[in-house]
Image (spheres, rainbow, N blue to C red):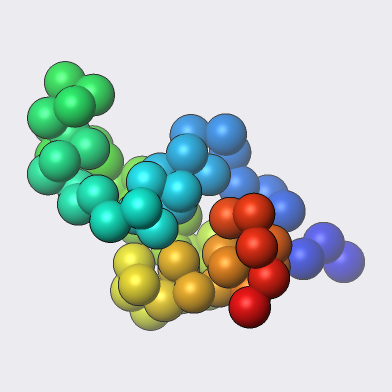
Length: 72
């Protein structure tokens, strides 16, 4: 069985890192020149893959799994 987070796409992992750095959905959308709804949909898929209830929860899971370069 694969661990949660092992199935994240490169784009989802990039978003997770950006959320961990404090960026918001709106900030990411503006910087990437895409609709905030598109970023939100990708964030929802990211949360689902990690089994997270919120973006802060997803970041916490990402830290615990070592996806963000550190273990908690």
